[in-house]
Length: 187
Image 1 (tube, rainbow, N blue to C red):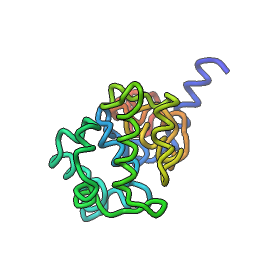
Image 2 (image 1 turned 90 degrees about the horizontal axis):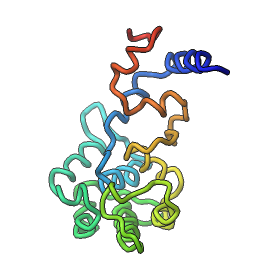
Image 3 (image 1 turned 90 degrees about the vertical axis):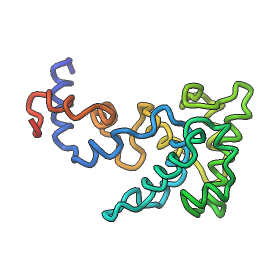
C-alpha cells in the first residue's frame, strides 16, 4: 500500500464517522490530570450529558470551578475529602467502593511514586509505574485507564467506541482539518 492508497483509506474511513464521534471528546482535560482522573473513574456506567444539561459533565465543571487548584494538581486533589468529592461529583460506586475513594487512591499512588506525579506534565500514560499506580486500585482497570489517557490527549484507541484509525488520529483536531480533506462529506 502506498501513501496515496493510505490517504484514500483515511478518507473512506472518515466518511463512516458520525458527528458524535468527531465532537464527543473535542477537548477532554488536556493538561488537567485530576480532572481527567475524575472523569475516567466517574464516567463508568454514568450518563455524561443529558438533554436537560445534567449528567457527569456539569458536575465535573462544578468541581473544577469549586476546587480550582485540585483541578490541575494531585496534591491539591488529595486535600479534598472523599465526602467533598462525592458532594459535587456524585456517590457512584465501583467494585463495592466509592468512586471518590478510588480517585483518591490513584492520586495518592501517583504522588507517592519515587518520581512523584503531581500534574499532567509529569504523567506518562505508558510508564509502567504510572500504569500500576492506576490499575492497582480495586475497581479500576484497562478500559478506564485508557479513557484517562484519551482524556489527556494521549493517542490511543477510544475504549468504548472502537478504534477507527482516523477517529483516533483526528479526534482532537478542529473540524476545519476534516473539511480540508477532498471528498469530505461536510465540505
